[in-house]
Length: 509
Image 1 (cartoon, helix red, strand yellow):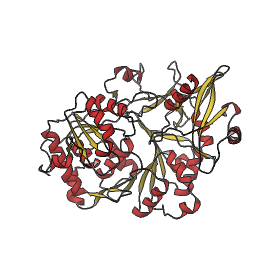
Image 2: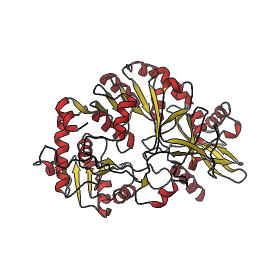
Image 3: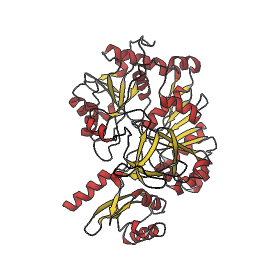
Image 4: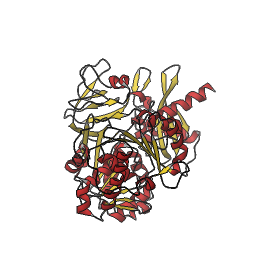
């Protein structure tokens, strides 16, 4: 729906509420400020199809900027502010941004990014004033609050997480349609997830990731209110659900684990009965974790599997999942094919690479080699995940191909071992990797971040290995354990590239 229409209809109703600070942005304020910023874009020579980069934490100011880009036909890239200055600079330059809008508190990242971005013509800052950098408030102070004359739908261009290498920009195709037509996710949220003007959506993740930002935009497109957490905190989630009577919320499985590990009296102190849908994605959810969440929240969990590439969408609700435990559902868009390494299509319950057909094509920005590698000779595309389907067509994920452990000629899937260990009371977080082994090729190694109150050491390591052997075939159990922090992206994905580098560096030393 057109934001102008929504503002006329909802007026002072909050479009956005920040979870910790309580700051709000009404529909009327969002309309006025995003119009001013859209006029600024045009004034600075940005037309439909041009690109901007946004380097902001989860803060209220991001939403008028995003909506201004969305209604101006721009491509816009929210940049992960947890990256190193060099990594952030790569994205700002690679996306061909002509304008960078950053937070004053992220100046140590923004300044070098701006300095090395070859196409950048201007930079603006929000928050505190930064010497030598134009402030957004000053830039729009005298600009019109009415819509620009040539509104058109823009699109976000996200970068892949970069868990196995440099992030890849996923270049969307601009529709050229008038602003208000909406994006496909906006319509999916209404049709498949029942978003409406009555929706109160809790966004728990960082807005530089696809789902948190896209679903906040979609909540507003459908007339609802998005409550946005500045950062994830397990008890704060329950507090916000209780306070705002949240109807829809979005999670990744590591958030479920942390919520389940709260003390019983803490969990019991908050009313979560308003939640109609607890949506989760981004990483596979251990079966026991999901069972316990359904016991707690009721049959409200809905899981989806999709990539920012937009080449397929799978979904499964709680009642269906309980009869297909471990599945991410059936395809709502795209047709799934499971193939072996030679490209032969496999039958039910045979694990192979997940390929998708009958969908829109995508490309990685400025990288035809990586784009070509994502497609086969039939025109099917893959995200590099492994899995299988059952006789009914339900998809089950195994792991990323790059994470697969080959030990003694046998394929071992780290996710299966991580799932077994994750709810051990001494485990705060876990990652499983394959380390070089002279006899077996690779050996299974578990990296354990111990839970508060637990003591790392040989006794705990033996206990964890035994815990695994009680639940899995013995050859899958870790042969070694180390105790150290597990590097994760805020999306929940484990940075196994970083872990492998740690062990490689230690071996070299």
